[in-house]
Length: 217
Image (cartoon, rainbow, N blue to C red; front, top):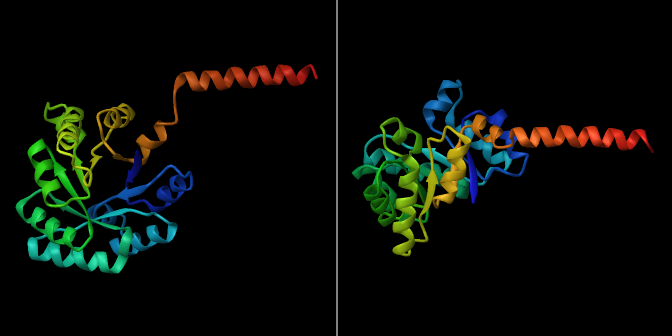
């Protein structure tokens, strides 16, 4: 059971990684470039922080994605997970990179058939987009359960389910309950995982009782 953050904000990543609860990062060049930074500078900064798994997205046709994926894997080593789309070109690149023992995250998964093809291509991770499915009146969390059922029945152990496009804390819990190995989420969702009204109330009562004990000692 692993938690990834889906962000390019290195200050936020550093803050939460120091908790010891974060196992990796997913991001994309668009998010990074919106911050005005070079993607590879961000990747290196995250590696220097100790992040063990960073999904680095590649784009273009199959030749461009393959060349860029190999270059990134060679430059950043074991921390690099190359992220490709679930398209014929993306799966072609996945298969060749996987043969070279490069970790690949096949993203934009919207049904079981795509998850089957990604596993056949040697993907380390498949990323079903839970929230985006929900936007289209399809229950994204049910897809996690169906992929998990197929993988378990077919003894697929090399490919892990990475639940993505997460918007609510409940989706994190249900993703794991439905068989996801990893959930990636925005920092705002991760921060809300700590919170519950009954925890706050219990802490308030504990503090009140403790002050009364101290007053009588």
